[in-house]
Each structure stands twice: as C-alpha cells, then as structure tokens.
Image 1 (cartoon, rainbow, N blue to C red):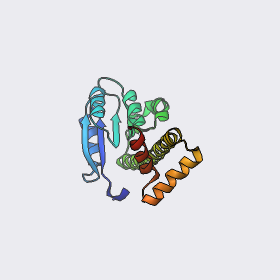
Image 2: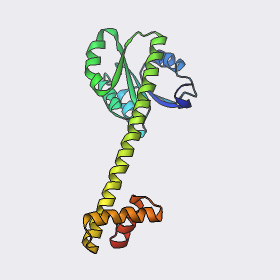
Image 3: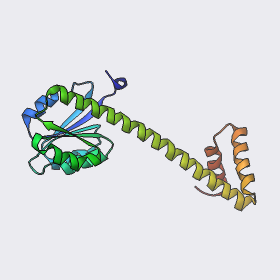
Image 4: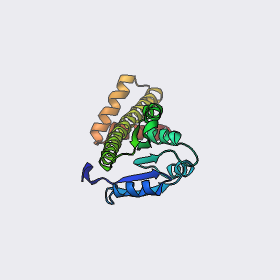
Length: 195
C-alpha cells in the first residue's frame, strides 16, 4: 500500500451501472473508503456540499447536465477530480477543465489506464495535503506576528515603551517563562485589554 496506508474517500458521479461496477472493481476497500455513488450532477453537488471527498470521478455526460461545471467545482476544492468523456469530446472537454485542475480520460479506457489515473489522483491529493499543511503553517505564523504586534502596541501605548523595548520585553519574558512569544503576547493582551 502506497502513501503510508492512507485511505481515500471517493465520489463517483455516473448514471451508468456498468461503468460504476467496472470502476468499483478498481477501488479496493481499505484503500478507497467510503465510496459514494451519485447518479446525476444535482446529486453529485449535494454530496459535495455534505462532505469533502479526496477523489471525485465523473462519467460524462450525465442525465441532468454534461458535468463539466461539477468537475471544475470538484477540481478547485481540496480533492482531486477525473472526468471520463467520449474519445471524440476529449480535446474540447480537456481544454475547459484543465485550468481547474481536473484530469481527463477518454473512454473507452483500459483498466490499466484507469488504474494509472487513480494513482495520479492519489498523488495529486497528497500534493494538495502538503500545500494545505504549508498554508496552515504560514497562517499560524502570520497570526502569531499579528498578536505580537498587538501586544507591542499595547506596551507602547499603555506603558510608554519604544517599539524596540516592547519587542525585547516580549522576547525576554517569553524566554524567562519558557513560553512562546505568542503565549506571552496573549498574556499581555489579556492583562491590558480584552482579546
């Protein structure tokens, strides 16, 4: 098992029982769970509102819409999307969805090619996870900077410190108390102003 034993949630949006059965054979339990099947674009949209999926597979066209809009929405989310289309529509659909991060595969596609597509989707999902972790880390650092700056301005306005003195005070107090600058800033804010 690749990707550290990670399990991927899957949304299949397809009105074809035969297609769904063939796809389910390529999605072994233990690697892909839960697997949810929606028979229309409308149902697929509802499922995406209910929860996020790691992988979204769309077999176009669908009874209520072709499915490109749904694919683009799925591709811009946190999951990875793959759209299956008739071979004669491949170029047209690919051009519409590629900028939204959606992979496209022409039907009929041999099982080996579909399996490779699933591997690409898993790799894409892992890349998105990494980007999410990096973004969260940057956001956390930005929030810490904001708190420290807020605490510095409180020290400047209430205790008449210079900005340099306020900065040194926060750093020294954090070191002396063995806490982070963020925690020290929160203590200052709590002491002098309500958060």
